[in-house]
Amino acid sequence: MPRALWLLVIGMMANVMGSSFLWPLNTIYIHEHLGKSLTVAGVVLMLNSAASVIGNLVGGVLFDRIGGYKSIMTGIIITLVAVVTLMFFHGWPIYIYLLILIGFGSGIVFPATYALAGTVWPEGGRKAFNAIYVAQNIGVAAGASLGGIVASISFQYIFLANAALYAVFFLIAFFGFRNINGVHVNSMLDQTAAVKHPQKFTALVTLCIGYLLCWVGYVQWSTTISSHTQTLNIPLNQYSLLWTVNGVLIVCAQPVLSQFVKHVAKTIKQQMLIGYMIFIVSFLVAANAEHFIGFLIAMIILTIGEMLVWPAVPTIADSLAPKGRQGFYQGFVNSTATGGKMIGPLLGGFIADYYNINFLFMVIISLLIIGIFTTILYDKKLKPTVENAAART
Picture 1: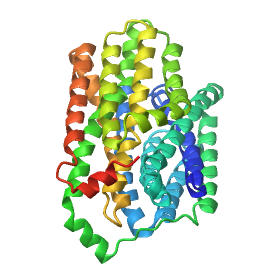
Picture 2: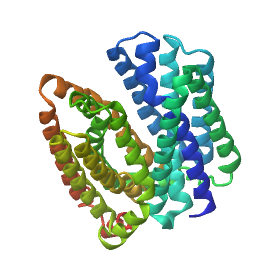
Picture 3: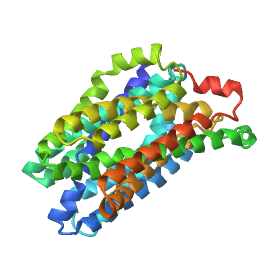
């Protein structure tokens, strides 16, 4: 990887590690420390996700207009102001407003970072986006693990650690990203190119329909499935171990994944289709699991599918984007994922409450089958040259 991409990877790791100190504990803090109901906590987290969706779209547009460095710095500064304020003021209702601001600011950063990764190593194809994806997961694993330890001492230290890591991210971006701007400012020619190729955006929307549905299923593991494991008397520490396995696999299984991609799933489209089918197998295993070992096997299978699908979508978006629209396309992809995270807990909770968990698994598998069809169809109307570009690994 080029040096510029390494800087982006390190920055993303610090960014996600900082946010991971807080987001897993939001519900606990709102419910137990602020004395609000779980329903209120759910609404607050939904507002945070909605702000992130808007931030994703804004971040993508900013990348296209003012470049990667300025876009990322804008998002970091907004988030840093919010998390520093949170150190001193974390009562009700200011906690809501600051979480919304954090969602918006961090939302700007993600599509700009992905778009910048694609511009600094265009010949890397999937590898550039996979590197950012792995960095995110290292940050999540480290931040969530350390966050639990810090919170057991004092929640005040959670806010402090969150702010400190965002300050580190600010410094990395301020000094490290300045010379890797990757500007793609829209010109009249770029705008005309985007208008002349509406089929590219139609392809992206088609692809992202399946991507959103896949995320709706994936987030059930941290919501309804986690509750389901408790009804089966699986200890909470064992459930937490599932996510540890998820993070370790994502980092350690990369060499195996590279060989699989090289020899079996040779195009991005094949990787996605195989990934969706692996997702379906994981939910079939989880639906029939009654003990921890069953959920562990399902999580391992799920992680393999995730490693194939998650980096593939931004790779395809980068190949589809007309010149000067890379940021907007990455913003659309990120907002789709965030939308799935926002819809998933609400839909899953409703089905689990009013029907049963087995019916929920059937619904998830049905959504994944729809995702397979959208992946098959998304590039049917594209020219062969675009298809070839989207297939690079």
